[in-house]
Amino acid sequence: FLKKIDDAAKKVKAYPLKNCVVSDEAIGGDHGEPFVFIHDLQEIKLCCADCKKEFDKTPAKFVSKLKSAD
Image (cartoon, rainbow, N blue to C red; front, side, top):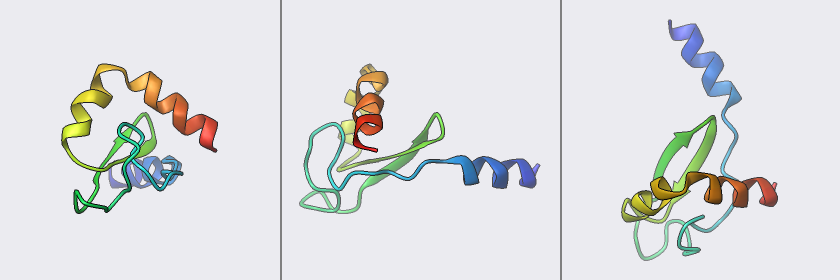
């Protein structure tokens, strides 16, 4: 079981931006520590937990922004 988790963790793509993919605010700026989670093997860093609600409405929109940034 732990080997499967380790294998999945190795496949996770690192977050490529310095700003929140939702609000475009700086990661670690005025909001403090970023809200970090994994979505379809892609690390996502948001400036705050409030942006997660917006991300969840249209995740494909925001993931496509990340893919174009790579």
